[in-house]
Image 1 (cartoon, rainbow, N blue to C red):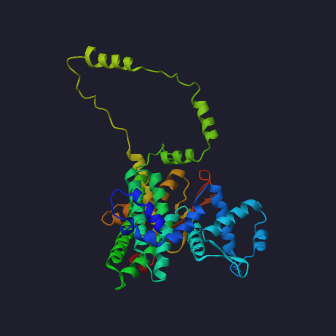
Image 2: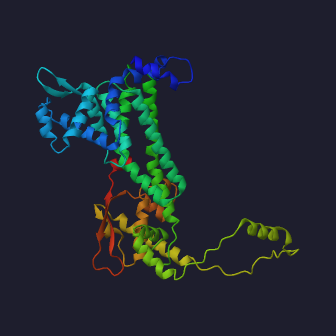
Image 3: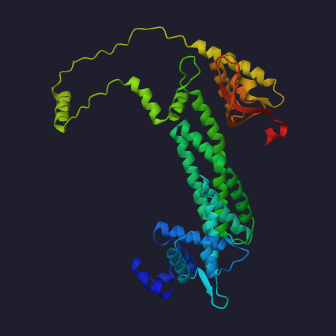
Length: 427
């Protein structure tokens, strides 16, 4: 360690010895373990991959942890012998692979076992798109299980939760339905990890023997989780508001979002074919120099003759277009759906609840079901609010159900309407 400390002062701007810095002491104390990671990850990506491959294969044989040189050569017969000798030599030089001269066998060192255990935990979350929070939660839970809760791990978890909350808040402020839906889906995926972190944090700050700093961090984690819980209802309300603001294309039932979602699912070649008929000729590109722009601006601001008086009279009165018909039709559709849902006392397919002869009416009915359980309808007395207060729950798994023998609708979302009992409503 003396060699390392002697070379560290050149990285610092003061004359304070690096060994006396509180934030550096944990790193110096863990130097043997850090050297194991340095030995594994120093060099090119190909070299690192082969080292990890060899070390993990050696550590995977738990029943016979000792390896003879012949066994190693046989196990890694698919590797270049010269490259294998280079990898084994590096592992031996950095005390990751120990040679027992008495038995003539190799075995992994304690530092190598610890490094492999840490990497295996990290690898288990590699295929998860939201692996960060899962991994941080598992680290805190593992420390709590053995009675060694790491304040640093708690801070990382708190930082991950605050980062997620900021990401969800930005999605809500963007007013983008796609971003809000993506954020809502991510919240649902990480919620299991959030609940595990809640249990760990509750155990930590209920332990009287824990340091005050760890207890405060655990309390901050619980507060961050409660803020994320509040976002669940906010997502639903914001999506319902955006759904009400959708621009409907005539009486077809289609909205601009439907068109946008369909376009996003098309390939580039398909979009090019669609645009080919709409753009028969490419527009000519015009290039303007700064001098030309300055001449035009000078004329518009100084030389152009403008009228002394401007006409400020209002346009003639015209009769506003009749917009009551669609509103009346939707009100009737909402009332009929409310009457239909009042009679639901057992699990009912979504198809049976909303399907009508008209595509537009069916789509409107389906959009109303997203308001079930909305708390903001408590003081509203409209039929839509009465529908939202019905003791029903919509369960949808994202699948699509085919509709047979229907002239306007080919498929519909698969789901169930479940009646809520009093205990569910109170919860």
